[in-house]
Amino acid sequence: MINFNVPPFTGKEMDYMKIAVENQKICGDGQFTHKCNEWFEKRTGTAKCLLTTSCTHATEMAALLADIQPGDEVIMPSYTFVSTANAFVLRGARVVFVDIRPDTMNLDENKIEDAITDKTRAIVPVHYAGVSCEMDKIMELAKQYNLIVVEDAAQGVMSSYKGQALGTIGDYGCYSFHETKNYSMGEGGALLVKDSSKAEEAEIIREKGTNRTKYFRGQIDKYTWVDHGSSYLPSDLNAAYLYAQLEMADEINETRLKLWNRYYEGLSGLAQSGRIELPVIPEGCVHNAHMFYIKAKDLEERTALISYMKEKEVLCVFHYIPLHSSPAGQQFGRFHGEDVYTTKESERLMRLPMYYSLREEQVDYIIDQILKFYAAR
Image (tube, rainbow, N blue to C red; front, side, top):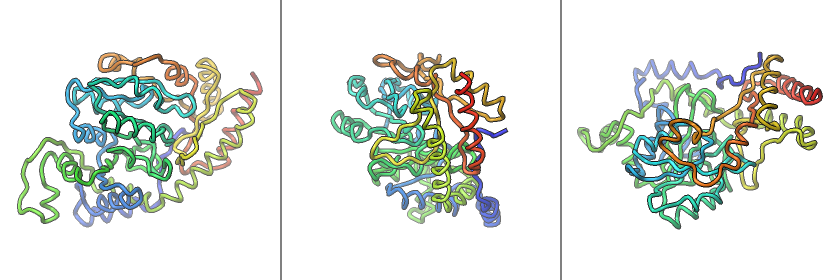
């Protein structure tokens, strides 16, 4: 069986975790946590990066830093993971879903303005498959209406928009290092803070509402509870695991892009004949090959294709069920405007295996099986 996902592994992970253990510093903010934070700050240019226990928690921190209050409205796509919405629902906000673009599966930047009300506080663009939303338009709207932008860049590490790293364009950016992501620490994430003046507040929130980080830097002689917060700090063991991959980030990225391009070239004939649709990478966007998907004609064809591929020992999967169609989505949010593409496109999309250790001959086999499926129809 060709698995859908295999977590990345470089070979140094266990060595670095052993170092963390031998240093007797396996709780948060050890040497590897600092190394990871510094790596992202240098690589992305963000003012502050703070490793977290998950992208979910990074987004919760962003909601706290944005001072989201009960009754506030937050605009986002319905085609996303539940954490995107939960972070703001936990603050008492009302989620306002708008439709997506069919080409990138991203938030339709031209549908946002009509959804803005006097209660709107934030826009949350989700960079699906590591392909950027149209951030120029989104940032223009945010400036015009005085809104905060929280980038859900869970899938966007190493991707960029017009030369800017995803996660660094809005006020806050959120990364994921879940085992399904390009770089993994099992569970984990990171918060990127654009404004350096918000860095100290972010550290306090991450350290359970205390100024403990300043204490460890020697800036104060004792620490205390100074604001609201929670325990968003990951173990240094997790950071050690991640850092081994960050050291090889370019190699991992290049390998994934090579596999992505192999899929694209091998399936381009089917796309040109109108049998399937392939991912679209808009001008100005540099993606990270986080996923490769195809779009079948409809839900029935996709279901048949997933079943066929499983028979051929290839695990392919669909993705999100649109949040506005879920019980919680209906309770905590509303869909603004018409659902032209969100449900329709989500029912057609099928994700193919994509991971660092996937072999080229496996990609060729997967392509061959898809071609045979359509040749028989």
